[in-house]
Each structure stands twice: as structure tokens, then as C-alpha cells.
Length: 384
Image (cartoon, rainbow, N blue to C red):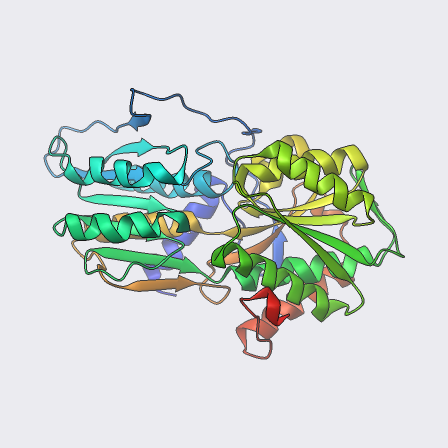
């Protein structure tokens, strides 16, 4: 890791209360600072009729870098993916002379409109337009060719254009670790917080948002980790079709819990709030995603065993810093996994200390095996 990357990683972790230090252990304790409020509902209201939200830093200097953010559907306040991206923006604004505008599309059909509004703006003239989420790929593939002089970033997909810097993650690697955690723990009699497992349980659950190649990586890694730890444990899967449907997430989770699952892992944005609600209602456990959700969804900390943290903030911060320094990696594709500390397994704030040591050892051994190349993690659940 370069000196900048190390400094930036520590800054984002300690200063913002984002995901834990995945490179130190397979699954670490969560952060002690940062956002500790339940952020189920969106934290901002639309600033105008187009639905854009604006927050700007103020500065008398002339060398301002203007950044436009187009968030994924589900919006801010999801306690995971979008909020994590926003933390990278805030970190850059703390470090550099940044002014920014944040937009929150309600659906994928609005991506092109927001991308083009920002790219076509002359007051301000945006130096970088950051597009968060894999569903933005098709729109950005067109927008980036229509605005060849505009620099873009996309997170979670690759757009092969010279004015787009693409950032993806090896989500399957981090998901493998939480799979090992869940599989090892579900065969034990374990009680902590508001949840419990039964030693005779052989069923776990996975709840996804919008079904597609990206979320399938979460599912594949989780299932592979489960089978690696115990081949007798099965995983039930449900895709809700939305990243912002807590009621749908709760309904799917309740069905899984009633069928015998005692731990459910979700990769579904704010839909996962419903999974946490179901876990509390049924006295079971859940595993969060993208950020330490025992912090960002603190009302459910008594059932969140861990979270598969994904450093979207690092990707956003690095892209902005590169633009500020005149080193923007247009046309390049950067991938972040366990080795690069881009993903990690973070134990819950309330429950992490109570998880048995043999379970933590199994997770750490799996992490080491992946980094050293002894464990190959699939990206397609059909290959598990």
C-alpha cells in the first residue's frame, strides 16, 4: 500500500467512523466514532423540482474543484452504500477545496437526466461527475460519449471510455468471510443481544436487492464461505427487486426465519432495514453490508453480528483527490479486495465481543487463505 493510500485509509476509518480495518484481521471490531444514528429515512429533502440536493463548501480561493454526485437508487440515509459514498465526498471536502452537488434519483430511468445535467452545467462547470452504483453503467456509457471533455467516475461497474475512471470491488471475498462466520456460528447454541442460534440449525438466508451480476457476487461469496465452513449448511435466497423496500426485505426475512434460518446476510441497501426488523421480531441474527450497520442502524445493533464493509468511500475519495492533483485515471479500472483493504468483515459494536473465539479464528484463517491464494472464491452462485 502506498503512503497516501495508507494515510487516506486511516483517515477515513478513524475520522469518519466508516468500516473497520479489514487488513488487520479477518473480521474486526467496528469503529468507535462516526455516524451512530439510525438512518432508515432519507436525511435530505429535494432542493428543487428536479430532485437535486445541494451542499457546498465555501471558499475565497479560485482553484475550487467542483464535484457532482449521482447516487444510487435508494438515496442517502440507507445506512450503507450511498452513505458510504458520501463519506468519501465529505473526507475529500475536509482535505481539499471542494464544492459539490448531490443528486438522488428515484429510479434508474433518471440516471441519464442527472448525469447530463451535471455534465452540461457551466455554472458551475463540474470537474468530476461521480456515478454511484452498477445500474448507472448503461446511462453513463452514453453520457460519457456525449460529453467527451467531462471526467466521470463510476463505482461498481466498468465503462470503457477514456473520460471514465471505473472502480469495482471483490465483494465475493468479503462475503466469503461473513459466510464462514454465519456457517460456523449457526451450528452452535449461541445467544447474545436480542438473538440466538440453535445447534441443530443447518439453514441460513441471503436477501438481495436488484438481481444482477454485482449482487450475485455477494451471494456467491456468501454461499461459498458457508459451504467452506460446513458443507451441510444450506442457504435460502430471495431477491426483492429494489434497494429501497424495507417491507419487502422484512417479508422475505420472516419467511426465511420461519423456515429455520437463524442468520440472514443482506446485500440490498435500505431494503436490508426490513431484514433487521425481522431479526429483532423473531429473536434471530442478521449480517449487514457496505458499512458497519451496527453503527449506522444502531436501533438494530442487538441483532447485527457483523457487516461486510465495502470501502466505497475510498473509491470516491481517491477519484476526487486524483482530479484535484491533476492525476485523474480516466480510462482505467481499479479493483479493491481483501488484499487492498477494499472489503472486510467487521464485527458488530454490541455483539462482536461475544462471538466465540473459534468462530473468529475460522474467519481469520479464511481471510489469510484468500489473500495468499489458497482459497479461490467464485463470483457466480451457480458455481458454488
